[in-house]
Structure formats: structure tokens, C-alpha cells
Length: 228
Image (spheres, rainbow, N blue to C red):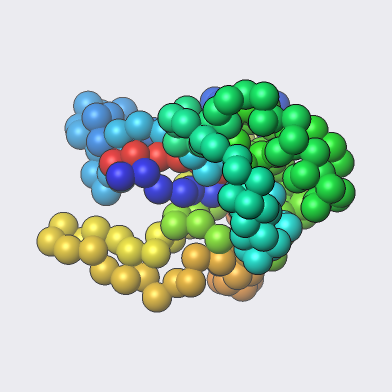
């Protein structure tokens, strides 16, 4: 099955490398540095965006408004065929200009360009990788990871120790496998509320560690489609 994950992490110019570092310990086929099979795994494949590409747009514009757009698609006889990474393909392609025009008419704040709900939209745009401060309060996901730089032993400057590759420091999913069954996490899936809860918990952390692991508006939020 495919699941929607949002990863919240410090700014970086290498999003792929950061996501790889964060996801590695949870790879069903991976091993740790000592050669032991990973524990607490949850994925065997993932991609940035994938079938959840555009989720941030849907949250920003509102579920009801997006539903009205889909209603228009039905009334206009818009047809789809096949999937690419789970995204719908407009077929025939001659429908694309009409669909894009209607999307931008209904959502002028989109700023023009392709409708993000179909696979002709550019992949991996700022719609899948954006700043935390730009994310709608309505954004939900099945799974969220908050990541921060990892610890690096440093005998020269002991104040500069949280500079390693990012790793997960907090994680939640709507339900978690306990080895026997899935347990409801009693979380509604709202990304923003989870971030705020984490910030509250960090108040008791040491100042330096709290400074490097507390999400701020300029942190990145990356949409990930993972399979397990």
C-alpha cells in the first residue's frame, strides 16, 4: 500500500540526500552501520511527490473547493487514463489547456501554470518541497517525521556537535504496527498541530539541542509517497 508522508527538516540544498538519510533507518531491506537489519521499518520504496504530489495545494485551496473543481471536470466530460506514480493522466491530452485554464480561473492564487492534480504538472516543484511557513494549516498526512541534524563527536569545538546528516527526532502516524497489530495513534493527521505539540515538548530540552531541532518557518516540508 502507498502512504502519504510529510518530512519536516532544516533547510538544505540537497533535498534528495537529506530525505535519503532520514528514511534509511526505516528501509525494510536496509541494515545499520554494524550490519544488523533495520528495526521498526515501514517502507520498501519511496519517491518525493508521487501520487501525493499537489497535496499541499489541495490543503491550501480547501477540500470543498477542490471537490467543486472535480465536479466541473465531470460536467465538462474530462476523461483520464492510466497513472504515473499514482497521478491521473488526462487523455486525450487535448483536454490539458481547458483543464489548466479552469483550474487557474477557480484558483487564481495558484499563479498560473499546470493543474497540480494531474501528471502533466511539473514534478517536484515547490508544491512538493516548500517552506514550513508556506504550508496550509489544513494540511494532513498519514505520517509525519520531524528531522534534525545528527550528533557529531567533536573534541576541538564541543559546542559544534549537531552538524551531522539529518535524522528523525520525532515521528507519528495515524496507526503504528506494534509487532502484532496496528494501533491507533489517536492523532487526527494534521501536520501543523503535530509540529506545535513537538515544539511544546522541546521546551524542556537543553538550549543548544532545542535550537537545532525546533522547526522554524524556513524549514522544509517535503511530500513523500512511500510503499510498504
